[in-house]
Length: 401
Ligand SMILES: Cc1cc2nc3c(=O)[nH]c(=O)nc-3n(C[C@H](O)[C@H](O)[C@H](O)COP(=O)(O)OP(=O)(O)OC[C@H]3O[C@@H](n4cnc5c(N)ncnc54)[C@H](O)[C@@H]3O)c2cc1C
Picture 1 (cartoon, rainbow, N blue to C red):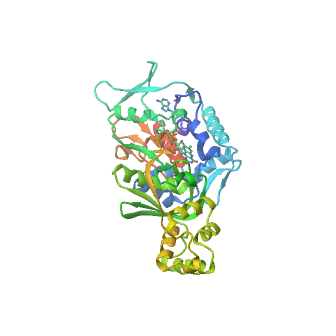
Picture 2: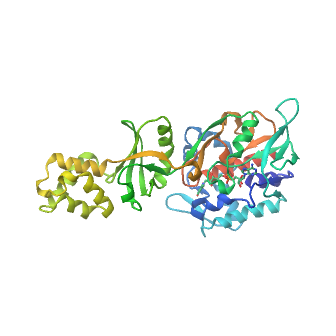
Picture 3: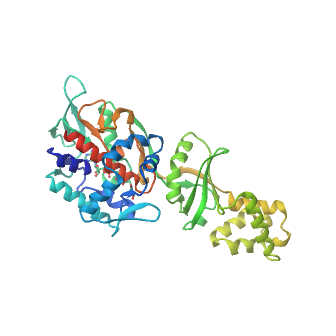
């Protein structure tokens, strides 16, 4: 929508072809229906949110920045508000209003829209693949054009229309598709206690990813136990590293630190004092008093040998066992949730084959890509919509030239 609107605003005659009966179905799901359009992060942080490939976005984020995006909506009557964690959302927290602005933008610039129409193949000039001729729809209609922007999104939540078609179209044009996998995904665990902890949220804990024997990354935040495993923004952000490790057949665990603000030595002192203060009460009573009930019950199972022991007689080794459960609580990760449920799709059209100054294909003249179909995956927090809007805007104005 942004690409089509901007191309039309720059003077092009634009036809927007949409597979489903309505535009923006996925947009309506974003941020739990509140639409977290961007993040308050400055440019360097914005780039870093996309990992090592983030610098590809430098031009797009310069041409249509975070502030430009916020202004785009504010000037059209949807005021944006920044949350304490940096997420930018409409003040009234309604994704429908964001979608309404985009629809009006299309109308204002006379973009024609074909709903319920699927682009199936891309047609080239007869002699070589360097000139675009048009597209064919799934019902066999040929539409001629020398400029085409592919903005077909990723592969998750397929009911929204995003079924990965753009990857096939890109392949037809000779593009490389970097391996597709779920991104910002919840994780499944086969640890025996998962079902018992379902519904529990642990706040402000340390979460480390352990691959084999080595610690890969650590973050701090909230973790939610679900019926299948774990979720929450930090888990989603760490899921990329985990999915790659699982694909390499490595063993992956999450190590939870419920007391992340202390060093091991400091925590040992605190724990020693705490346990001492429990005197004749048992280790079981200590867990029940200091932890949420479901977690206390799991700790009791993991510490069964000493659970009925009086705190006053807990020895150093036993205290270390308790400390390790509280600061290095391990959850085995078996796999990510299916791509259908992922927030985004990792992988996509290779960045090496796109011109970051224009979003045009380096292989086919007149062909442009933007949004999630390209090989960029941002952290959770509004970065992915910013990427879609910025690359869409740049692709639109480049194609209109
Ligand atoms: C549940 C959920 C919550 C999210 N929340 C956030 C959030 O709060 N903030 C954030 O930054 N990101 C969020 N995201 C990610 C964000 O929604 C996507 O990154 C973004 O929508 C990608 O935009 P896009 O335009 O590239 O693709 P899409 O929004 O997926 O749109 C692609 C469009 O192309 C159409 N299409 C596909 N194939 C064809 C074809 N062959 N012919 C014609 N039309 C076709 C589809 O029907 C669809 O309308 C969330 C994602 C999900 C699933």
